[in-house]
Length: 366
Ligand SMILES: *Cc1c(COP(=O)(O)O)cnc(C)c1O
Image 1 (tube, rainbow, N blue to C red):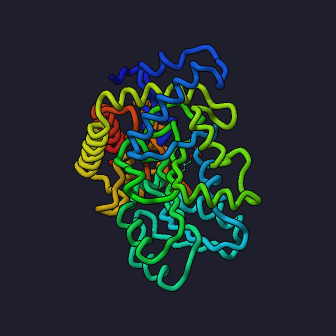
Image 2: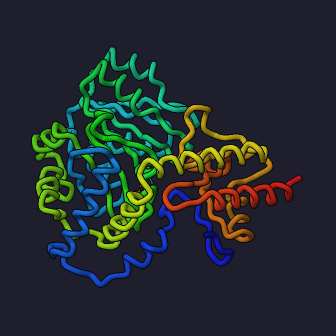
């Protein structure tokens, strides 16, 4: 699959498109109120419902993941509410920033150290003492390669609180099992350009009925472009609220078709295998995995560099000499970790190639 004239793109998105998607998205623009578009919408809707094991209608917005996260904050919270954000990295901190902008001091942050997951015992202690209207968290923290145990966290929350539960699954949706209805959260956020191997431009929101009802009450503070209730009623007629990113729709239509053909269970199994392969090769090559054992994401491997390496330099070498792109760290981790994404359209050889290249780079430093 990997040819030397192609980039082995291991950044956390936009991820590569399958060749059949490249072909399929090559279409002339059309009216998003046309019968032809409605057919695409219906296929996407039904594919997402199957993938995410839900009866709710996915709300499809023209946006990045960041904007979709902000929409959840705006649809649920008014300035005098109290909310809690569970963060273990850059993207959790981003959620907290959004909440804080709206609630000021009523925005509470529970921050785990980088590389660790959310501390459930600590969470329970906080929930025993305080009440919150909503709780925000990241499923797969792309900045550190940490994955949080969703069902444990949700059941811990539900034992002590009836807060709305909002989950950023932007870097896990499409690669791991996220059965929305049985997990029992209120808002789940995804995008097309990561695990769903489609062009950027569309965010995917699943919202519980009580979250939709709350968003109606919040209409004075809420969002026009991200009006969940309106988007839901239009979705019933296979339409979007605003002009959709047609390429994202077509790409996702094709990608979901491929995934369904392979079987969603097999897709999850594939990503589990690739992640195990990546972690094994990392350790065999003497790299330390940055995420703590038991909290390692199936879509991103973060490896800790010893002080002989600088991540920016190493990433540049991988690109120049091996046509491989990887992520460096975020914030104060910039130079100390590199992140290898294995979400969406990826095979085992592409991951092997990364570690072969890393081993060669490493030999230059001894
Ligand atoms: C990429 C990412 C985002 C931001 O998505 P954009 O589409 O770049 O705005 C948010 N959260 C997580 C976990 C991500 O991986």
